[in-house]
Length: 208
Image 1 (tube, one colour):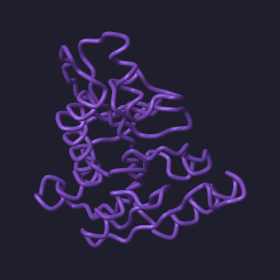
Image 2: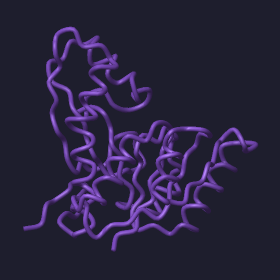
Image 3: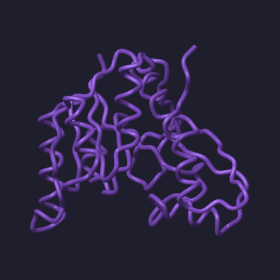
């Protein structure tokens, strides 16, 4: 049984997709053992409570500096002791020591087709604003393992989504969530839980 910890910052739609996927049997051999939010009073915490999942708030604002927050964050993760950490809209830079300790055990969902519209400053609605500004016809979402770089880890899965005339960032964001994020993140977790993929030379290989 793969024990996963889901880290969130806001509404928690991807958290809900994971909860629903486990309940529906689309994600097998998996249980959510905890949720960590860096913000108080967000919808994610309601979703966790409703599903009976232990949730913790760790806000950088509650610590004297980022080093103290990083230390508390790492300590909490160790206490929860997950097999896999899922960053589901977690808008916090992951400490380097945490990435090293959990190498190839942290996955992130990003709302674009990496390497497009990713890296520093590209998060949430900003990704879709930039995609529309650039006039791309296809966007999408990417699930990847997390390494020391920003959105640079081995790619697990991607799914394209069409950009339509008249799209606003909000409309495009919703379509990318529904057609890509909520599809490929649960599938990636299920693949990891059932040993279907491995990382070789910084690339994800699907086992036969």
